[in-house]
Structures are given as structure tokens and as C-alpha cells.
Image (cartoon, rainbow, N blue to C red):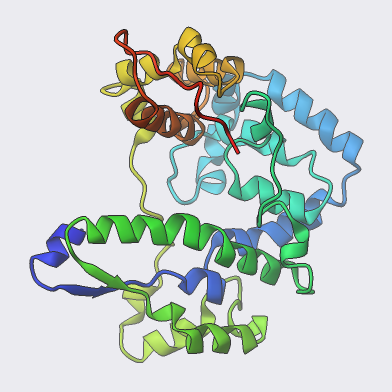
Length: 304
């Protein structure tokens, strides 16, 4: 997309930060409702239900509840109904709304169990004090996304993709005047009638027909799940090799190998969990220093 734009212009405008500032992500709408429902059920009952669901194979759940796919999977995402139900068990043990948010935005729910000899560090996502002064839970999520997900993921992606073809990409929503204005607005001007970015929509309606605006929100995704089972399988297998993971010394092989095997068997779709590890392994193979056998020498590197 950046390359196509660069063939016509040298500067582009990005809509990034609109979701964080004006409440556009679905999790802002869904998490409060989900927490209200979870908090009605005692923790021990939720944990018991979670254990019961996890004992049922994904294929069995798909056969039993396939009819519910449009309701559980309204945006056509890649996970099956059974996989969705299994993943929902991860949320049943949360004790606070902050833990719920952390689960919603995380892939590996307990990263310290995957990284050898490590403990989960306090970050903007896991530290409730980052947004603790904001009384509203939705606003706390929006603020945390603004100081974590936005600069560490979204803006990095856009910057790399655009500058790779010498396209300058500007982000008007991050003009300090827009940011300050957005945070002075009451939440009702951002989320209304179960829809986010309410005020932005009102402005847009003046210039763009509603039928071009009122469509389901869709992220930009690629079929990593099928790639890992197909053309990328041999590459991934070499990076996931148990002896290699042990020799590198960064990861605990057991949970990674388990998810890799489940992914290959199609009992679960662990594409994002696996991709996180693969990106580190690929980076390490490129920059960590290789031996003649192709192994990576990592003694001089330490996680910080």
C-alpha cells in the first residue's frame, strides 16, 4: 500500500490514534460488559467451568456449537467456535478489570513461563498506576493503549512500511491540539449507542456518505495460521527445534512445542503466540552470531 501511494505522492496522512483517542476499539465496548458478567459469578465457579470446557476437544465443541459461529465469530476472524471457547477459559480466572484488559491485549498470558529464568516485568500494560488517576475503566484502557500499543506497535508498523519506500506518513490525530481536545471531551462524545468514535463520525458524515462509513471494523491481518502449516512450516520447525531452543537458552521449549504441535494438528490456532517467538528466533539467527552448523551463539547476550 505504501509503495502504491509513493508512486503518486511523497507524503501521506494516516488515521492512526483515532481509535485510542476516540474509543474505536471493540475491546472498549466489550470489556466492561464482559467484566460485569464475569463478576456476577464467583471465582471458584468460573475456574471450575473453565476446567470443564478445556477437557472437551475443540473439534467436539465445533460440532456441538457450530450453529453459534455467526454470534461468537461475527467479524469472520480465523478462530473456530471451539477455539474461541477454549480461549475464553483464560478470562474466567481474572480477578480485576485491569487483569481482564491485560489478557485481552496479550498473546502469551504468562510470558515468564515461556522465557527461561525470567519474571514478568512491570510495563504500562501491567501497571495499573499508569492510568490509575482516571476514574473510568474504558478511559484507562484508552490511555494505556495510547502509551503502549500505539507507539510500540501501530506507529512502528506504519513508519517502517512507509519509510521503506521513502513515503512520509503523518499522523494528524497526534497533533497535540487534537490529543488535548480529545481528552477534554466526556466519554459520551466518543462512545454512544454501542459505537466508538461517535464525534469523529459526525464530522465524517458531512463529507462522506454513511454507507461508506457504517461498516464492521476490520483490522489488517494476513493468514499466518495457514502459512505456518504450509509454506513456512519447515522454516518454523527449524526455529522451534527443541534442542535449538535449549541451546539458545532464552525460551522454555515445552509450552512452545506444545502450541506448535496443537497448531499443526489444527486443534488450536496459535498463530500469534508462535509468531512472537519466531520473530525473536529469526532475529537471533540473523544478529546473534551463527556457528558453522547454523546454531546460534548467545552466551554474550542476556535478557534485560
